[in-house]
Length: 201
Image (cartoon, rainbow, N blue to C red; front, side, top):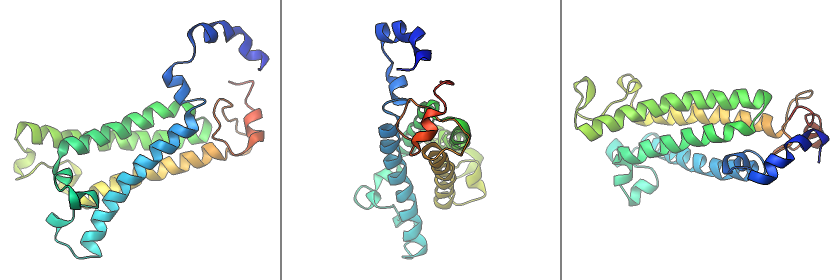
């Protein structure tokens, strides 16, 4: 154990690391893997929906993604869409503490974009719950949906959140030379980078 951690030994052993701390230290790699599976599955559903429209030529009301083929109510449920937006926002926020340096900056970019994506879904669920659609539309509309069709818009949202997440994870796994990486998680594939930051943690 590093000498710099000795003053905190009493506190750590008495209270132990919290669940949040574990998610950003020894569980960080596994938590990221599980989270990315969820993110990819959702993004794939949006991609499948777009493919059904543009490649297969299906009418938009029938283009419900993969799960929507068996459970059409899924694509219609604003509660489900908003719930996922919250899970996504919470996941990015909670796991952010495990990132450092350049990887943290990219992860934060994803967080900011997802926060706005969540606002768009919040507007949709408010309209669906109150049965009062904004802008005199026949169905719930979000802000940018006034300009772009919903399928394309939310595919775009999920894509521009996913891209900085991937970049952030890349720099988290392969920190740039000279940049310290947290030695509290096992995500880095560069062991030498792990050793450079022991004094900074």
